[in-house]
Length: 295
Image (tube, rainbow, N blue to C red; front, side, top):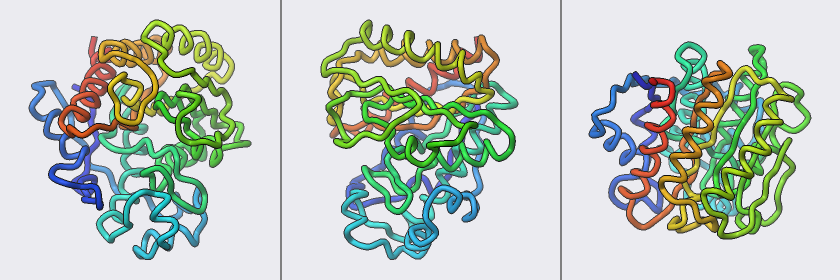
């Protein structure tokens, strides 16, 4: 069975939330998929875990739902009490997925991948950086963590928040001309030109990620499994097919499985006017990743 992490508070409406949110749609499509799934509910991340990555003043602004308007504009939506609760639960979910992966090989969080959040502010639809929060906690528990970010946008916040830590490495493969305009420095950055297709993407991924894994020798991978490299994504600039996204995910899962590296995925980006279509891409990603470990 595929271990899946979900919490009711993931489904928090925002100013953009009309009808079911993406997290609710992902949950519903997973339930309807017929796949053998083992559901887990996370605890919120303790405030101390969040403050190990984010400035305490910003954490307080979120916790008390009093984020200044200038920061809310940068995030892209208002921080209501519901959204604030969600902000603490999501990193708890990514951490739980990582702990489950250590026992099961793979686990998926049905939210997360909030890789643009910085120390003192959120950005790009990200409030807290669940990847960095979970990675720092896991590193403090003695893990060598590699964050593999395949979202179409660079993982600038993750790179910034974990910079200088010898026990955390970051990898980002993204559209070079896409958001954010000002990139951070990951351990390895692979900026792709617009329009890269399945074969070009896989060639770049294989030739850059394999040497990093050989160098870092991680004992856990956090995978930001964004599905916005798809050619039809509203905010993407690459040209992967749906089959190409599955090919990417199966390759990463096989790499981790064959090296006995626990793999925990977070949802990442995926954008469009049809929420069920977007959720379908995410569900295909989770099932492709988990399917490799079930083989």
